[in-house]
Image (cartoon, rainbow, N blue to C red):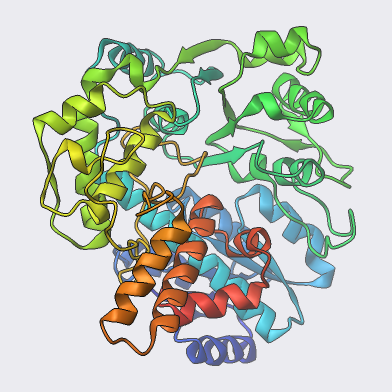
Length: 501
């Protein structure tokens, strides 16, 4: 793991942080001023560069704010935590506009400081995995004329910063198109930030989008940057925009109109240098007629409309997508990729796929763990696709990533902003319920002489629940814990106990 770089002219601060991070098995490298850091960054390669940078704000020979500006110019994705005395909080707040990850007020509580640093490390590692995944896998797959039209539109928009509206059914891959638009735009070096407006409670969505000032509401103990500030210089993807509350539509319209916004509880305007891409599966014209979506906001967002075809409209892509997803599933599980027969492909191509590409991806996950042979035949397909699945009596699949680390979602026309469970529900031996499949698995383990059936099945059950929740929240543990109805410490302990790190 790459080290955490600590910059402070106070030797005692450096010492305390070094020792605390060492106890957490987090490597460190310390500096006394900004000049040393900039020189080290020039000489560092990808392997020995910093995982995150923790810097004081007031130091001889250059301030932490100046250092932040110079670091972000060359390393825009590097999380930077600014340490500051309470009297410097105004300066620290201004640092957020320069891209700081968070600020750490002095004197700080050491456990909270370590927790903040670890959160920044996790965020950095998630970004690295996402970048590697996007670089390693094909951007999008599709040879059907409808998809070629989409590719051509992305090409035409490659030199533009214009606002785009993506429409299409759920599961058709709208976020992937948004990522492609960002990647091939003048803002490609800036961040891509996605938010599903339908997945966040109304009372939290405003703070999520625009951030909040310290003390703006109960529980707002620190100032927090919203998604608009996080996407500074890059692209903000607003998924399921049709479900945005009416009063927030007014605030969004104001940002799109004049390029400024206010944090919740704030009095100073914040400039937004962000390209907005919106997406919806709904008929926005109809929602405008119904009075639940602002007509002026609709016209602001609908500058360029890009319609994404449903999978049933591009059936010729199904063979290519199915083989790709089988490869991805096998890689995630650490098994040999399964092959699929022409007859099984024909059966898939005759299916309507109401869940679109995401449903095909889930079916391929299911086949990887449930099909009894290396060659998938029509009889092996799940009941909703074919008849008489011979895999029905197969045991429950182990949770994806158990013992191997979690797998990354496939980029081949999947829609990460509309998450689905990692595997489609398995058909059961009797009445089709997962309880029946669990019963069959328990009977098999009991008959084979196991004396730890409870532990085996409990671990797999908990692993599947946690991994699915983390996928749904895109890795955000606190949000996953809230959705599961357990505590933050509980989910952290379970992740460690179950080897899901």
